[in-house]
Length: 469
Ligand code: ARG
Image (tube, rainbow, N blue to C red):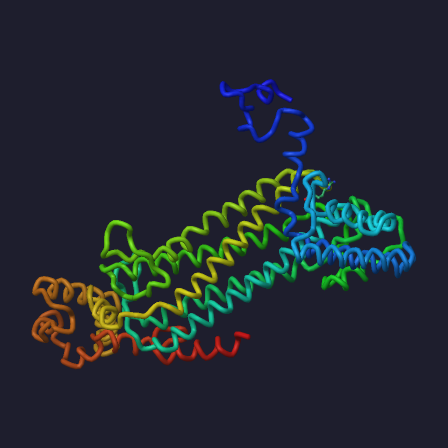
């Protein structure tokens, strides 16, 4: 205990805001206790204990009678947890010891046999893997729901012309469907990252015990199978020390949240009166308490912000794990809160984004008008010169630049630039050129694989519909 810990402030409160007295025992409990957050691992802890108990019984390490009583006791605990009657107690520190202490109260002596050939080190490792595995499955399923929402919007907007941007400057016309399908690709990769992480983490650490394995005739293959793992982990030290499964899941969550933040940012931009590309209903916007005209895209803004927490969680756990010697260290108890926080945030962000995608409606006329602005079909003019007049692209680019400059000077867009003006730049240009200068013609011409042409977009929508479960 430092001097500071025993100092009191002027109003007689301790340095700890009055929450803790400065007694070492209380401070120790305050820093050591994890039940307030690791109680979320209760279902996984019960599943691990059931598998371990069944295996100990089968291996003859504990008697069938004791095994049966333990399983009954675990059932009672599960019911108590479901009804809210389970007494979570700080003095038992964490979820593992809370369950064991309650089991002892319920069934007496056999409770003490459950921990044979097991340690909290492999117990927490298995519980946490099960939790993260489920979080990966849930995230992938939510991503697929979001993809389905995007597909539905893309399908009815495969022909909805909108400007495509680079540097947030109008670049070339695309369609709203094409734009939404870009996110279907991103979220598809996110879902596959969660699937990859799940596949790699799916090995059971149970039976590694404290760090070195067990002298009892345990069957780690049996418990691995019972818990849905592909195999037991192959090194007992690694089994209790590894948290890269959680880091990998957090990395996948972080990347996914950057994709969510990009779409959220576009929604924020698109609903501004300046863009006016989409409308969101009141379901996902809020009014201002002072400015009656306002409709703020709060949900999109919050989705945009969630990456802060989620990436923060990755940095947090990565920093905890860096430099930790093998095997278990108590530092690793700090693994849970960032992971819970990250996946709670991701889950909410995915659900909110799915809701917004279903809710949003494009303002087709505004989008189409914007698609024609900013000389967005200039590339089409250059391509026409290359194709029709067999001009080198660099020369075509130069002539088109001059045409844009002329149009700008006359205050017209390219489709309205008089033919004489174009012919002054190159006498070979004919009225045929106007056919390629509209945004619709520009989009329709982008027929290369993966391009913006509606037929290409529809082909990708069809492919994704077949891929998605
Ligand atoms: N509550 C601990 C954690 O979450 C469980 C493992 C404790 N192991 C130990 N050797 N003290 O990491």
